[in-house]
Amino acid sequence: MSEHNAALKLADDMWTARFNGGESFQDVKERVKGFMDELKSSGCQLVAIVSSRTIIQMFYLLLNDLPNDKLWDITVDKGSCMELDL
Image (cartoon, rainbow, N blue to C red):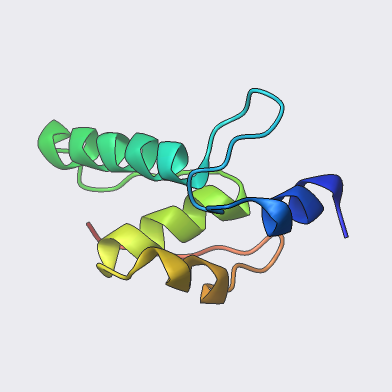
């Protein structure tokens, strides 16, 4: 188990916990939501995004209006491609 995952398990609230000055999952969710809002208002019809698993999971979570605890159930395979519609 990674140091980050071990620390998450010890946190009072895994969703808002920050480690080593990094972002919490809530911070990431808000950042992704802001980016999604920018994309929606930009008029772009097609956008390619290359990102890490957590960012892609957040996109999926937000697009499907899922509760936060479902983040861990969203599978993103390494090196995979996903098509998501805003």
